[in-house]
Amino acid sequence: MIWVISGTSDAKRLLKNIHDKVKYIATVATDEGEKEFEAFNVVSGRLNYEDMIKFIIKNEIKLIIDMSHPFAKEVSDNARKASEKMNIKYIRYLRNDIELDGALLFDDFEECAEFLEDKQGNVFFTIGSKNIGVFEKIKRGRRFIYRVLPAEFSIAECRIYNVPMDDIIAMKGTFSIELNAALFKEFGVKYVVMKDSGVEGGSVEKIQACKMLNIAPLVIRRPKEEGFNNLNEIMELIFKNEW
Image (cartoon, rainbow, N blue to C red; front, side):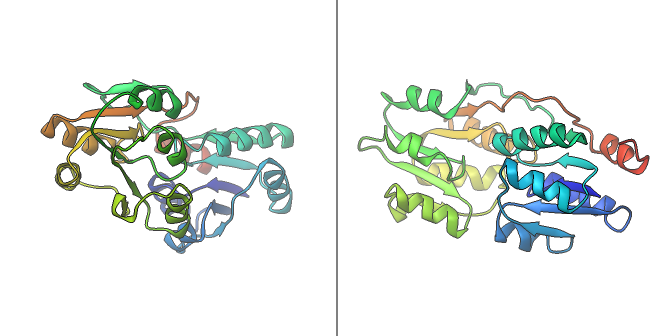
């Protein structure tokens, strides 16, 4: 059995190609994700390292294909450790790099927050809800706008940090250059904080929108990983049973 760690558009492309051709089971973190992947053999739930070991044993997993988000570092680290513990093959899919010309780059969210601490002007965040607390600590009267998924857990995270409802944009991407630019202009932002999520994550459109409006894009670098950035190569390995 192949285990596909899913939840991304990349994973959906892979599953469409292997569905009905090999035995697999896919996992997503949330119920919302399960609905998006309902056409496939999928289960939902957040798995820690111990959960992954149990999952591998229960489902007789022989190969793990990690198609999780580039910033799902804990998931990938745990899956890699679980594969080593159970002596099974682990394959990590990596999104292709994109041009980040004109962007200010940061190694993590804390470094970006440190940069913003003494800056003026509104800031637009497209980083999801997980790291809102890092930035709310340094807001100090400025307007911080968060674009998050229209999901209960995202809104709940915003409310934990008392983000005003007027500063929450609940939308599911990816978004065009024009829509990004319209939102950035509407809120009069000086900075846009984003992850380097590749083409699939809409990073190109965000950076282009910033260039149009002369806004500074602040980009969090992806965690460094080793893996495959060609989906066809991964499928070739699957169908050749080279695992």
